[in-house]
Amino acid sequence: MVTNVATALIGIGDMWIVGRLGDPAAQGAVDVGARLFAVLFTVMNFLKTGTTGLVAQEGTRAGREAQVSVLMRGITVGFAIAVMLLIAKPVIQPLFLSLLGAEDAVLGAARTYADIRYWSAPGVMLNLALIGFLVGRRQMAAVLVFEVAYNALNVGLGLWLVLEMDMGIAGIGWSSFIAEYVKLAAVMLFVFRGDVTGHLLKVLAKGSFLRWQSLQPFLSVNRDLFLRTLVLMIALAALTRLSAERGAVVLAANGIIYQLFVFTALLLDGFENAAQVLNGERYGARDRHGFVQYIRALLVRGIAVAAVVAAAFYALAGPILTSFAATPGVARAAQESAVWLVLIPFAGVAGFVFDGVFVGASWTRALLGTMLGAALIYAAMLWLTWPMGNQGLWLSFTAFLIARAVLQALWLPRLIRTSMA
Image (cartoon, rainbow, N blue to C red; front, top):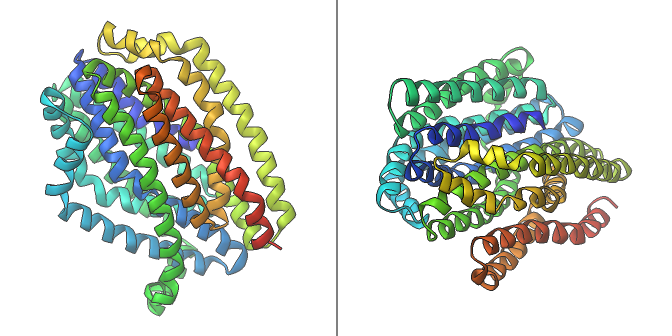
């Protein structure tokens, strides 16, 4: 959970830094750029979650050499995706910026940011597979160190490049780019040492990790996770697009609310990571009782943490939003939607836990189905609440989170009965 909080700080840090420039267009541009990479990079998060679940299962089923084979499949697939993203950059980047509603000054600043950060794609893809491997092996202390150092480097570079070197929004792009590759070098040095090196040499000598029989389960799990995450990213992109239609001030205000939502989500998503590993291990051992007990324990703890987060936002939302806002107008617009910061933790927590359970057990087709169902409810809510303005937008998003958890809860008993009889 603490590791995920560190991850959340990169977007929050960027929004805070650009807020020092006092330009709503620049702050809106960072939000648009962040959403662009949420679509491009976060949609590839299946490399991490899929690797984590399969590594956890292999740990109780086949041993460490099999875990390294999973890692090498993740690295191979991740590198291939990165190459395709770079080749497609001239088409993807302008298309996505247009779809996200960036115009005029916001578009120019967002293009500057995206032109730089886009080239971090290979580092992002490989880091996803490597971090997934470490999480699957319960090496969370190491992951925490890497994420904290990565975010500290990113924020420190951003402050220096933007405020001291006067590079503006380009400095934020460069800080993210440099931090990503420093992180990759450090994680690779940590992973490929000791017994992992010996297992790696054996896996490479056999070459079996690239055979279709070995790749097929990995690709099947990750295909479903990719599509599920793509649906989620489209839902988040709709939030940006509809915010942009309400002007630069509302876009900037919703961008701040969104980054605080990301902070909340990644905090609660720590329970997803725990479920991926703990339930993945119990699924690999076919321990039905332990599997169910972990679900209950994680839900109780998740709700408790959601309550703490909600209480903190209830007490501190005003000064937090003011500190991030580029102008008083942005601060006022953000504070009008502050109530959603209190409600969203409760709306999302069960879904995060169930996500981890489904991934740990490789029930990825069911996970995709529940996401599609929730997305349909979200689309209907956006249409119904359009007359409510910005509050309707956040109401629809909250309903989306609730629908996802309800559908997962309804499907879960059947999956347990059929898969762990």
